[in-house]
Image 1 (cartoon, rainbow, N blue to C red):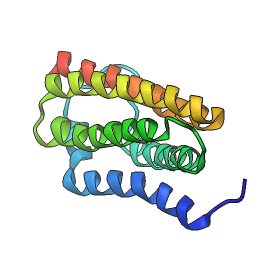
Image 2: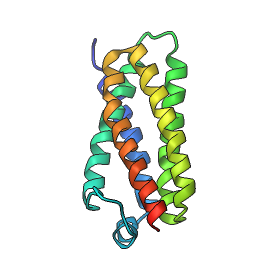
Image 3: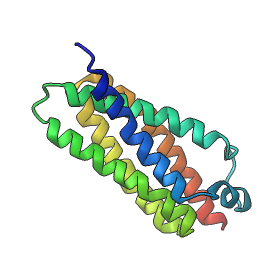
Length: 154
């Protein structure tokens, strides 16, 4: 497979920009995070931007692989990808800006299902793309634990 550098960069920039804009809209979120009661195993706030940057890059590469594939259900796979990315964009606004911990937990559960469906569709298109979505799924699953803990404790 010949790498189309322009499409690869676009593929990586889409989730990075989505996360970056959400980050701008939730500026000060780590102040909120440090002030709420958190469940055990909660990482320090400085971990989140690093982890999310890595995950967005992995997601972008997975998207690129599927976008370049000849998979017959590529359109559905990419629609699922953009649906879960849109939900990903909205979650921090619900959690940090609105402090709607219960709603954000339910939102995150729906997002997890969409991520799972996306990973399955990506795996069907190209196993590498499916595997690249696994760290994202695991991290959002962990985020669900944190979100539920914050909801219960606050």
